[in-house]
Amino acid sequence: MSETANAFAEAEDVLSQAASWRAAGEKVALATVTETWGSSPRPAGSRLAVTASGHMAGSVSGGCIEGAVAEAAMETLRTGVPKLLDFGVTHERAWEVGLACGGKVKVFVEALA
Picture 1 (cartoon, rainbow, N blue to C red):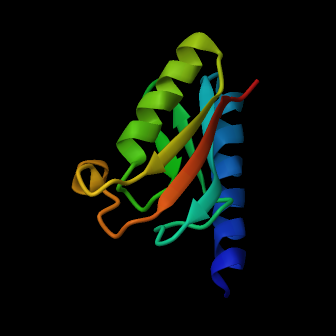
Picture 2 (spheres, rainbow, N blue to C red):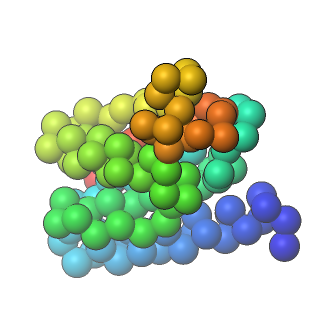
């Protein structure tokens, strides 16, 4: 399976899990990789679902920026305001944000209705 096809299948699983959580009454935010540049751990279209109670499914980075994205998702659930997150690296911040290999990732975070 190609990387793009694999990302699509994983995104569908995340959407199914998010729908199950919503059906159970959970508030859910969805984060989607919209753009990558250079070395990035996950392709565009990768998704992470986060509930207000702290459950997560999927991945937007293989772990290196998940914490920051989950925090932004929780804020979006509190405020209802979507966010476009832009993770890029300077040499000073490379290890701090977990993108030590370089690159850039944009992630859109929205609350599901």
